[in-house]
Image (cartoon, rainbow, N blue to C red):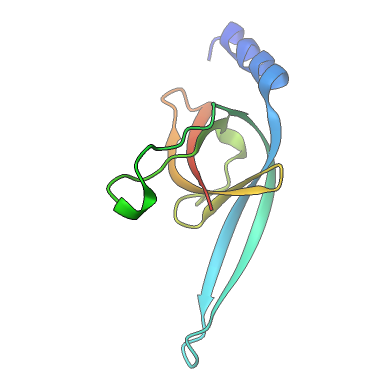
Amino acid sequence: MVPEITDDIDVAFRDWGEPILLRTVTRAVDEATGAVAESSVDSSAVAIFAEEVRSATPEASRTHHRRDAEAVVRTEVVPSGYAPPLARVVRGGVVYEVSDVVGGADGVLTELSLRVA
């Protein structure tokens, strides 16, 4: 990657980034009882958030998936296997479910599509 671009990314994260947790959830099912137990592992990261977007479609219609926010993180901080439906983002005490994880063509940034859990 061109050093000037890396420098620009560093400045953007320094100026607009905010601390978050990338949470990876693991589910285990007790076959005898059917009980589901969840555990999670958190990784610290810095993200740049886009404006929060709410769909005008009433939730009851279920015709569209509501996307509440988008965030960009450095690809190097995304845990291996971090993917829906067991990926979460915690921002200021609000937990978001990750609906999509898209790595940039440059391999430096990853975009997360989020909805409030």
